[in-house]
Amino acid sequence: MEHNKSFFWPQGILITLLCLTGTVGIGFMMLVKPTISDARSRFNIGNNDIAANVGTQQRIEAFKATILTSWQQEAQAKGINTDVPSRFQGETIKAVTLPSDQKVIALTFDDGPWPKSTAQILDILKKNHIKGTFFVLGQNVKNYPDLTKRIVAEGHSIANHTWHHWYHQMNPQTAAFEVANTTDIIFKTTGVKTGLFRPPGGIMTNGVAGYARSNKFAIIMWSADSTDYSRPTVPRLINNIFKSAKPGGIVLMHDGGGDRTHTVKALPEIINKFRKQGYEFVTIPEMLEMQDKHQQLLAKKK
Image (cartoon, helix red, strand yellow):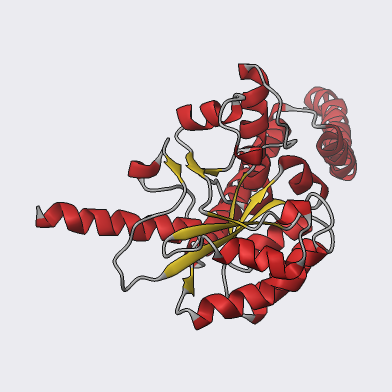
């Protein structure tokens, strides 16, 4: 028995030491673990942390997508369509034909957003409870995102007017850049993917209109030109519009691209004069939707 005791006693000490060592080791690991975890999260070390980061990124992207969808729904609720009726895709529109009891007109503004004048025009439209259509330049959307967001936030329609407003002949790659990049920045800034396009200067042969048509944009021209780009007097500017204004017509004005003080001064009188003549104001998407429904009704009667 003494022999057995002498045999187990060193083993007992060894086991005790091992237990103590293990306890100290566990305690040490518990103290060190936060530091290791912190280091891993800081430097993305380890597969578990990489997976967690991927999951977090996916949640962020999902959240962004939800917000974007919310913006689009809000835009649609305010009368802004994210596309155009299929019958108008690839078509060129100068005006629409509607029943006689639908006396509507669309006010459109090109070349913005622009410091001061765009905000002034938005103020006038807001005061008069009118929605317009703004054909914006991609470079101006980039430079003035807050003004761009305000256009959509206040219920106006926003549309593509190329990136640079160039008139010269463009190869297919340049034309694609001018149109596609503008659509992209409008979408990223406002959440609205427009299907409306207006070529600068109304030029149909320099490449951009051809690209827009082949990509199913509705090409929106005009039936009444204010010629405000040449800065006529306010009375002449107003007369330029009303000498060719008609129901279902599209009025061309500018909120950007230069000094637009005459346009700003003329706009309240233009609005009052149209209202006295019994007109209601609509956006281009609203006008196309009205035309689409009218044509559907005519088709059913045949």
